[in-house]
Length: 132
Picture (cartoon, rainbow, N blue to C red):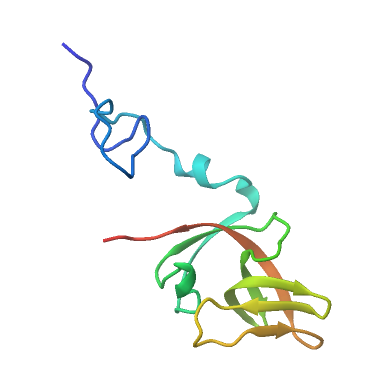
C-alpha cells in the first residue's frame, strides 16, 4: 500500500503553464516564516489601508512583510513615517533629499525636505494578497 499523500502542499512547485504529469501528488509543507523572513528580529507585518499603491499591485487589505534591517535603495517600496503618519510609497533619492512616490495618479508625490519629520521605517520585501 502506497504512503498516503497530503493534499494541498506542493512538493516540486506549482506550474503556471500546463500541468505537470509528473506531479500527481503534493506533500511538502511550506513554512512561510522561513520563506518570507530573512531577519526575524527586524521583520514586521502590516495591513494596507488605502489605494495609493494600487498601480504597483498593492491593494487595501493586503499584508506587507516589512524588514527594518534593510538599507533602502532607489525604487524600493517602503513604509515611511512622515509628519506623524505612516505611508507606503516608492523611494526616489536625489540631491535635495527623498521623494516618496505613490503608484496611483490620484495622489501627489511627497517631497521630504527641511522641516519634514521623516523616518524610513522599513523596506517591503513581500506583499501577501487575498485572492478570494
